[in-house]
Image (cartoon, rainbow, N blue to C red; front, side, top):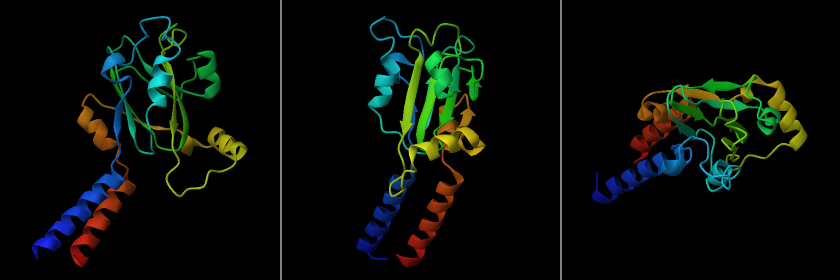
Amino acid sequence: MEYSSKVFVLLFLGIQVVLVTCIQFEVGDKTYGWEVPKTEYYQQLVYNEWASKKRFNVDDTLYFGYDTFADSVLVVSKEDYEKCHSDRPIYYSNDGHSVVTLDRPGLFYFMSGVAEHCEKGQKMVVKVLEPAGVETPPADADQSANQNSSESLPQHKNNNNNATGALAAISSTTIIFCIMTSLLGLFFF
């Protein structure tokens, strides 16, 4: 294989990795982590402001780091989020290293399950973008489908190892796509 062909193959494979890679976000970054906001000014802003500065895509993951068994992460409905009700979570974890896969486009509602933490601002809404080239269904159809379908529930991974959580976030479809395009690259280049 000529030098230019090798470079092209490496470039092709590198583009594949970029196109199918998901990102693991650490909620609150290193500044806050997942805890009750420290000052009253930030109580209602910290996590939603953090989320608004990120671009979340399907199959990205959120890592929630906090003191084991001293706090928790819940995924809840919009109604429970607005009222800080934690008695009907869609998902619950209190292991200190919670990883949640954003497995569909749309809104995800997170909050702490510890009494009064949500009221003090430990809650967040994350908007996951539609994949490129996918039409958005009408709002009413999307909302009723999300309420009536178990397929719309997020997938969650609880791992004590961040690397494992990041690997778990890669869907089987993504893996198959990588293998197929790699094989095509080998045959044609």
